[in-house]
Length: 350
Image (cartoon, rainbow, N blue to C red; front, side):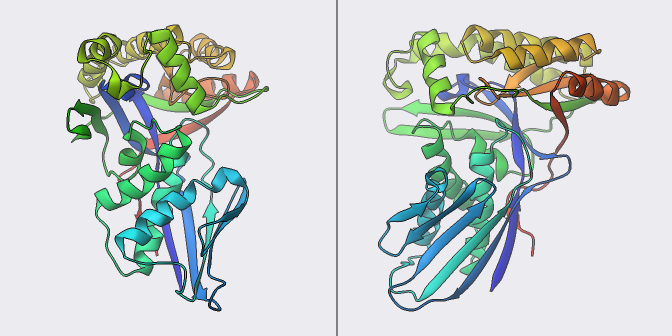
């Protein structure tokens, strides 16, 4: 049988990196150029002892065997953490099942920094739950996506990306540290852009080695003076890191409504970006994108996600100038995408 599921991407409107230390973040599930990441899962019979779970995507393919060993492109090994999470929830073991699973990703094409490492496993988990005849909760999908996303983030995922891609609305989010462990606090938010404003998502990559999320998280920690993992820091140290970001997040929320000021929101994006740049997670490409966009008439903008070389950027623009600004960015060698808030999180399509 075949099962098709899809998941949106996400953008951080504010608060990335700070959120790892308990700061507030604003995130939104988004469709990029009207597209989503889509997974088709085929389940067929297999001879006993030859059961496999294969995943094929735009960057290669990987296979998990019944004994848990893996082969193929190591980049996709983390995907199997989501698979194992769903298997465990359904008390299923690949070994002895006489089943073969073949999953194929139809990549939506969203650039780095838009939550692909959470979106991809969320769609895969939705398809896999459908195979088991189970309607998963958003928490079920979150747990599966988080298992993979955490690997890609070097064990330090904030949990924000997985939550955003399974949500139907934008979110205010933070990570809560307590003696009993780490938990996540989310609030759905009725956020929208000021009337007459639009968002462009821009890929800043031109050349060179792409930065890794884990490396950028480490750089932010170094610049912020965090000498221990977030959970081992005192509340006062974490608050010192997050306070400047939280102040801006609160102001951005106030402007994210139809009656808000696009000019003020653009300046707040700029302020948020300056904090991130001072924390060592910007790049020449990101700075060039922002300079071109501002010269073409954008209200403001900021890096999103981890940042670094090849990091993504959001630019707040006047709706009527969006094509002109996109053309100016293209002329400078930067590809841009139209971004709209998604109204549906990860789930089955057919």
